[in-house]
Image (cartoon, one colour):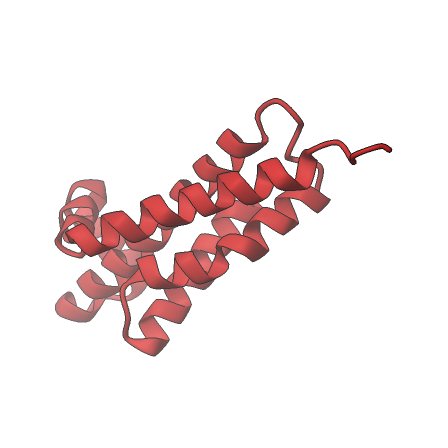
Length: 128
């Protein structure tokens, strides 16, 4: 739920600021990873993988929401009706239009940053 909420916040921020969702996901990487840690979602063995996957899922959700908003703006339908009318295929096609090499690098960088932070957060404290 935290991941989907982060994706929704990223999509809203991207629409308001007029930027690609990949930039807002990059900004939300650290807060999302911290929330996952405090919710108990990051366990020692899989912390990096879970955090990276969560960031990528949030990014995909944000891109899909922005794509639905674009379809709604182009068709004049309300948000929910635009998704029902266009379906998942149209949403994915519009979301692919927003992908560029820079966006892919930003999503990958956000995932790596989340993995590093999650691994650091769950490491055992050094004892002297």
